[in-house]
Amino acid sequence: MRKLFVLPAFFLIFFLSGCKKSDNLTSPAKNVYTIAVLADNHYMDPSLLIKDGVAFQDYLITNGKLLEASDAIMQEAIYELIHATPKPDLVLIPGDLTKDGELVGHVSVHLYLEQLIQAGIKVRVIDGNHDLYNPHSYQYNGAAKTRVQNIGPDQFRTIYSDCGYSDALYTDPYSLSYVSEPLPNLWLLAIDCCKYDNINDSIYTSGAIRPGTMKWVLDRLAEAAQKGKTVFGMMHHGIVEQFTGKHATFPGFMVDNYQDVSAQLMNAGLKIMFTGHFHATDIVEQRSGNKVLYDIETGSIVVSPSSYRSITYIQDSSLIITTKHITNVNYSGIPSSQTFQQYAESLTRTAADTLFTTMLMSKPFNYNDTAAWHISDCMGTAFMAHGYGDEDKTFEDTAFIGQTARQYGASSWLPGYCDFLWTDFIPKDNSLTIQLKSGISYK
Image (tube, rainbow, N blue to C red; front, side, top):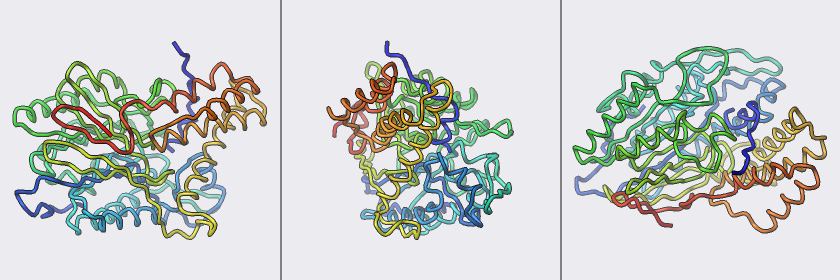
């Protein structure tokens, strides 16, 4: 068995770091709908940055998110959705709507979502690990940072009442989970798997489904089966590993007890789960007998390659999934020599290289700066490849990793680490069709 390379806890910093009832369904005969998925918006309200300086730059250095541009990115995402052809019938957001749960950020996000609703697009949200009781909710002014008000679950439910809660068929008494029917005969099972019961000075990266919530979820799935409803799930954390050893190599990005959770959901009849959290574009399947469950992970719009999903849903029949990338952002911080995609990739890659290099020069690795820089180049390349999805490692990539590992004393773990991220499990990540009844998928 290949030995897993487990990253230190501080590595997680990089990855963490109102909907009115719509008349969008114009005809009872309509059976083809468009669903968009925006994940991990990490919206930072402009008021939170009074003056750039050491305080904010210290937060950003290994963060990898385009926080200063997040307002401009959100504007572009909303514009693209409203002006898309066809326009989405439904937008799903599986958590991390805000930078760090700031009240002002949630209010601003809801105002953006209200634009979608006014355009006749339904919106459904669920919380992410950054959204509730977050101790990192700060306003930055040069070298100083000041704590600002964040929110808890009751405020989340109130702010986004018209994004799933006000017309929910069922709400879970143990969490922010709910069931709604945004499209005919389609139940959306939005599962709150975030940890926020104990308020302290640490953010919980990991997630878990509470025992009471799990029973509630299984009861809803049983009822949906009896009533002949199609069910899509939505939650923040992953439930099927996107690559070997993800739960150990990157602790906190799979829901606790993910193997048991995914098996229970799959055996109860759930086939589709939309997730986020890891900021990568990936689709992976889990099968057992004639049962199948797809974990459809969507990347973050504020992390390269700034992706989101556009899905054609043929009622009770199939999903045709495509991946889109935000490319046109009106943000003054982009150098004139770069496109937005080039700018985003350079910042995300720089943050990854900085983080990996710092980690490798620390215990237990203790590499010198030259070795750490070269090794981090391999690690960062593998990570970026996974973020884009449909990873395809070339012979040259393999040779470069092997040469670097041998030259700098990392042969015992570096090739395996890169293989984990660079090995793409079936099915394809960016473009895929799933037959809902049979569970069969094809490109």
